[in-house]
Image (cartoon, one colour):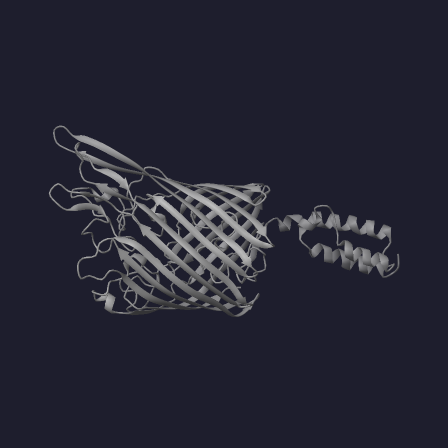
Length: 529
């Protein structure tokens, strides 16, 4: 061996040791580099053998310091492809964030962004920067004759993910917050002291083909862009700037336990038990159903209750398939939800009577995200339900309560609802994303006539104009990345223009046949590196 060989051996070993420990699973080194050195006559066969032994020993010694591993490959926070560009993908899986640090075998990565959002609506929806699709005011009201303009930083986001490996299982801890919590009525007077709230908070464990999640996460009913998603970057909740996303989107963020099986070949299946809620409309969601006089409203959620009783958790199942067609990614999935409802009628007195009535709610969806050309994706969702309106962002009640029957008991009838979204997402230039969506929500009718006159339920003749039949939205939007740097983050300008309308089941003579609004969102966003 020449006098230069020890130095080259040392440098080569150092380079190899800087590579990920997983590259030494078979005690390999960079073959191309070694072959070059051999061809130049700098290394001999004995030198190569000696180097392999040394590197193998060093890799074994250094392995414990690199036990933490990301859960799966996915777009990083600043990526701009057509599948995640305008929504900020607040997950970091490549370990490149300069904010990351390690404690023991766990890697900690803070993430988030700072938002400065401006919102204009042609009518006074009165729901802040998040649009109440069901509450667009009519033109024969004061609110329907007023426009609204708002500035807000409430959508700014803070989060932390923790990645580690425990007994060959990849473990992810994830917390995500924003400032859209329950604010005081005096929020906009002086201090604008927005309230921090929990968006996501869960732990996820993956070992071999199995994955288990527990905590507050996006519902399994939420459409995915790839596989069965755990972190937001793999979900489809549109590229909209509106905090309520698109009318007709099926989603929830709620406590759950979830089991997923990665079967291979692009096939993934999941099952989750999720937090239930007996929802009959109200507050900033759907209009509340008309209830029979005397019914105990504590048994249901009318948009103001947080402690209504529930019989059992919602059961959600999903099967997803991912492949490539013509070199372009295709994702398709089917999902279903099963729900249980229960109410009680109790009559006191000398001979008390009690009757429980049960009903089941169901819903099914088909969703897809298809690459149809380079940097162009076609997206679509379809959801049909009978008793699953809560999952359409609460735009439909789940059920109605019927008047007392011949046995003196209240009963339940589920309410049908469905929603659809179709759209295109196009990476028009290196730093420019364009998108457009058309969506609709359709709500059924279910009601009973009262013996003394009048009706209870939803969608009857003479029902409140808040009881919607249809909600439609057309949206165009863009995301422009002004600059980005892996060490300093990114600055984006987001814009969304939407036209929204709602049509009620009943229109009184001389009243407007629909309510509509034009909305403009502009958002300047700084994304943490």
